[in-house]
Image 1 (cartoon, rainbow, N blue to C red):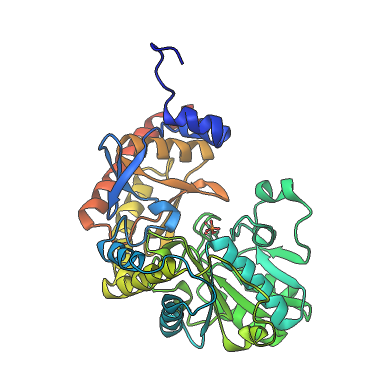
Image 2 (cartoon, rainbow, N blue to C red; image 1 turned 90 degrees about the vertical axis):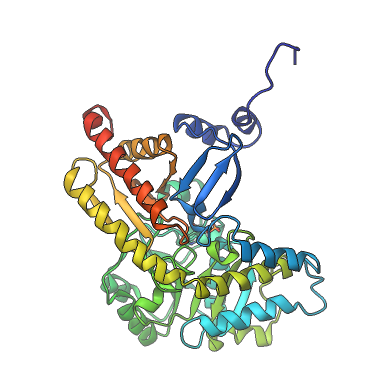
Length: 419
Ligand SMILES: Cc1ncc(COP(=O)(O)O)c(C=O)c1O
């Protein structure tokens, strides 16, 4: 580098050594800030600019950035062991599993720990095959379960699937929210039905009230397991600690990740009913993960669950969700050319726009107003709001003001936006 040349900025360096395509998207969206810190629902960049994060780290930040109690739990554990020998017993792992068994619905009792959502789904798919001796799975169109091979095979977006064919065989996809479509595919070769209680990346799709109950009944009749993927909905986001609680349904396996790590550690878990985990009695090492449930991650997750309960995060999600919905429904009525639908549950809200172009414009307008939001991965016409559940009313109102003024601005130039 010559003396008079500036060093390349971080985005250019990212472009050179990480992901050139994504760097172009960042540039197009005007996303050039570099994250440095945060607290609650506020993310702060290296220039000290503050943003209200309505994307909540894609669902990771339910407890907010750097929750003091969860940070302290991490610091305490760092004075002991962060990683496990995996030979002597790991106390935080056992304590976390006990707490999950206590708070999870019904007789969901046993936990397997891993490091991400997709790994939790992999574990659930494998356990379903091992427990039933059957090979096939039923999943739903638009589903997002992760991007490793098994999870991708049950996910429902061709753009992510096609480049990697052939995927794991034995999966059928049926329309989401249609219990009859699942019933028609159930037979004695189906190991499990995997379903999100609310489709997140599919565009925040809330199924009919009885959906899960019907699917549960039909799975029981067919001897198939029900896997609930709560990676995005879990830990209070929809107004209950777990979204399946809205229907009273107890799945055979429940996948968790994202917010389970309290915004501080990566962790995934699949929690199962005793009959599913019997497979470990014969084969204790049939499915393992070296890092899964490390003492540090487990201690953090345990505190994250306690904070969620003690700070009443599900109740907050319900109340603040209603507050947001009232305002957003009014915006939908005022700017119907911009906002085509508002839907969701608790603080998991989708705003459907007429095109991906308008969704992009909304994200860019919000960015200019220091509000972060992203579209859903399997439906780029939907901008989702999944802020930290600790967001204050004042911050939520500021974010809603920004959405209103962004919608007004877009209304004035919407005819110039392409599809
Ligand atoms: C419902 C659901 N399942 C699984 C995953 C995959 O999680 P991860 O990205 O941690 O692998 C996601 C991620 O968005 C998700 O929303």
